[in-house]
Each structure stands twice: as C-alpha cells, then as structure tokens.
Image (cartoon, rainbow, N blue to C red; front, side):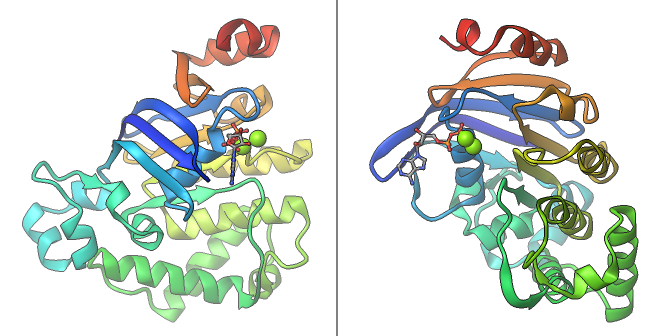
Length: 275
Ligand code: ADP
Ligand code: MG
Ligand code: MG
C-alpha cells in the first residue's frame, strides 16, 4: 500500500532523512520508535507534504483503497486531474507529486503531537468541508447533510465526545485529552486508507490512552487500511498491537522486527540498538 524508497529530506538545508526505506502492506500496523531528533516527525511531515520539508532523493508510492475498489477506467473517468496525473502505469500514486490536500484526498491522514487550533471554524464545518473535498477529488458523491450528521454523531459517540464539542471551533480550548479524542473523531469521519500518527499517546492519562488506542483499532485495523504509529511507549502498543516495529535513528531505519522489538527497546534503551 505504501512504498518508501531511499528517502532523503532536508529542512532549512539540514539533512534529516537519510536513505529511509519502508514498505507497508494493507492490513498492517507498523510502529516507528527511536531516539529524540531521529527524524520521526520529519518522516510524518514529509509524507504529509508540509512546506519547508524538501525531498532531495527517493520516492514514496501509495496505492489507496479507492483505487483497489474501482476499475482503472472508473477511476480515470471520475477522479480529479491531480490524482490522475500522479498515478503511474501500475496504478500507484506518486505521493510526493501531490500537494497536501490531494494527499489527504488520496486517503492519507496525519495526526500530530500538537493538533492545530482553528478559531472561527467549527469541527463539524471543518470536517464536512474536508470530507466533501476529498470525495469530490476521488470522483465520489458528496455526503448529504443528514448523512453527515449521522456519521458525526456516531463517531463522536464512539469517542465519548459530545456533539456540543463538535460544534465548537476546532480544538480551541480543548484539553490535551479532548484534542486527541477529537483527532480520532476526525479520523473516523474521514475514514482514511493510511494513517500516520505521531506520538498520539503523549500526555494522555491511562483512560484517554485506552480510548485513543481503541479508536485506532476500531477505525484503522481493517484489511484494506494501514497505520504508521510513531511512539515512544509500549503502553500504546499494548492496545494497538503492531505487526512490525522499526527503529529510526539518524534519518533511516536501522532495525526492524516484530512486537518483541518494542519490548526489547523498552528494556534496553535505544543506545545498544541505534548506535
Ligand atoms: P523526532 O521526531 O524523531 O524527535 P524530528 O523529526 O522532530 O525528530 O527532528 C529531526 C531533526 O531535525 C532534529 O535534529 C531537529 O532538530 C531537526 N529539525 C526539525 N525541524 C527543523 C527545522 N525546522 N529546522 C532545522 N532543523 C530541524
Ligand atoms: Mg521529538
Ligand atoms: Mg517527533
């Protein structure tokens, strides 16, 4: 579903990703761990297309769910020009050729450590606009007001977030835990193919951690979806059991293994492994 090959990227002229390769298949959860400053967040930003993060070498190919579900002819007829022009002959999208909105429309979701606040725009407005923009870009029908209301009620309910919260401006005045729940509601409504979650567990108490972890499982643990989970802690991986664990150090993957690697890291630290 996602193939990252030999990715090099720099910020402000400083090289941060340094030949990173990673392949994620549909149905998989991959955890990325690693020391501070290793480039984990940079990887998330580069995948999301954040301005200022310049890719100098390598490629990222993405084959989202809507491409698996419909024939090439149907995709080509309906999809907007941006997504279509980034697709190669084998049906893979050159993610790096797309702007951030088109990446989201393709099915990429990014959750960051510090969710943005958007004063003056309510969560529901923001989400309905975003969802419909994504659907249009994929050549799908817009969601009706009634269906959107049902969907947002259902997703908010699953995260124990009131509809009143969803009507407030995006994240403004939300506690850390509420922002994280809200991020899970966003993910549930947008229903992405691929989610990159960067330290989504940081600052959460045990109850909030469980809510968020179970949210990730409920929304993303599907045969046609995948997750890249950037975390320092085993406590999230106890809930969202990863299929693979990777250590990122010095801008590349230096070690990969199964769930036992996370336990080993927790016991022994990064020093021995990432040195
Ligand atoms: P991690 O998430 O693994 O802790 P980051 O991706 O945040 O690491 O950062 C990797 C490296 O890139 C760090 O050395 C950091 O100081 C540097 N870095 C991140 N953003 C910038 C920036 N805007 N300008 C210069 N250096 C940056
Ligand atoms: Mg950090
Ligand atoms: Mg980080």
